[in-house]
Length: 470
Image 1: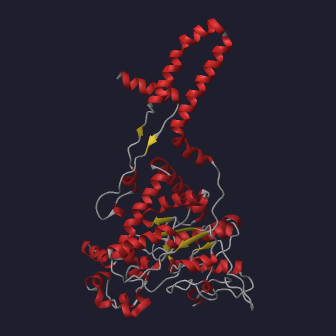
Image 2 (image 1 turned 90 degrees about the vertical axis):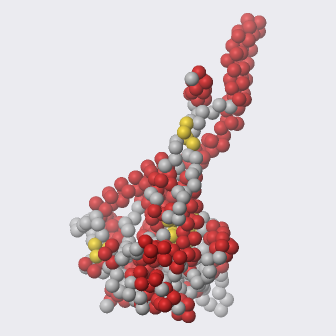
Image 3 (image 1 turned 30 degrees about the vertical axis):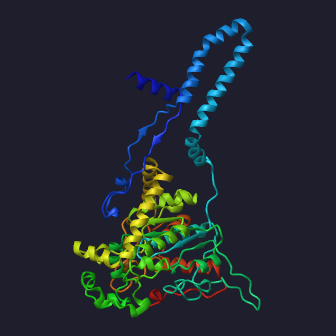
């Protein structure tokens, strides 16, 4: 008990407090995404009492020196006493700073105001909440007058499903007999199949690269509904369950790029072979490639936590990352797999599963390093509260509704086949400034891309959106 009081007294005198957020490995098992984010972050917060032997000796020397200082006062006068006490105080301060400088640096860095990141490449993977991220980037680009790498001409994708090349971007290549290097842009976020050398031609050297992943089971469930009419493997199957019972009966690699959404589609988006065997050495090598290029990989199941971390790394404001969920399937459109079907899906899309497992771990490691549990909880609550404020301000109903029921063509989402895509209706009577803000937050990606194209290339014909014209 005496030792404990002594340590507490030292802590109070030193005025240093440190919370030890000791990281913990992700929960065991093969389903890290099924745990809540609290399970990943509920670390014990233990007070650390800085009990350093050198500091204790110096402290004892200082306190014990009072008698000696008294004798010095008697012999040499008050001036020498003051000088001695100053020297001892300086030595004590140096010792404390030497011991705790590493603990103070992160706090000092957090106080430094940094300029926002404005050169950004977002690899937009399919059916992973990436349309919501794209809306965030579009809004930021428009608000700050940043250039966006948009699809050329009448196209809506940057060459997908073929590997990206620079000429898929409007205005990237300069005309004339002696064209210069390709034009560079601030933001790149439309669908493409990643091809780093070509991306680097149009993005600055200091570009921040990031992407987003989703659990392969739910991603495949959404893909089956969304791409059922365009993927040959899905078109022939009565259900995803039936497809996974005998996938090679429906899936033919000779169909080439037509079936990219039917197997390992996130792996494909990264520029890799989605039909490759999940050999351990091959997978590890590809994961290293992704880690070396992408500064951050987000997780769709923890979207709010992802936005908090993204905001911190980009040095953006809260409103920059607040968003409404866009291009989401209605729950009644998606049929969930049985437990056996889930296991088959993970085996069928083994590369996507390895990809997700790896970056789910790195995501939480990054969260702990950058934020810690308490700060993350506080900032997630702040983000959700602000989203609710904007929903109340902007929306006639806070919950999204079937896109087919939305009369305003500027806000009606694209509806592929039988899939029911959700959208929003704005409150009537909004003033112009509020209306402009709210329209941008709920605008589907095709309409927003067409809007930015007109703003960025006013001399070119407007992009037409066939499903709205029909």
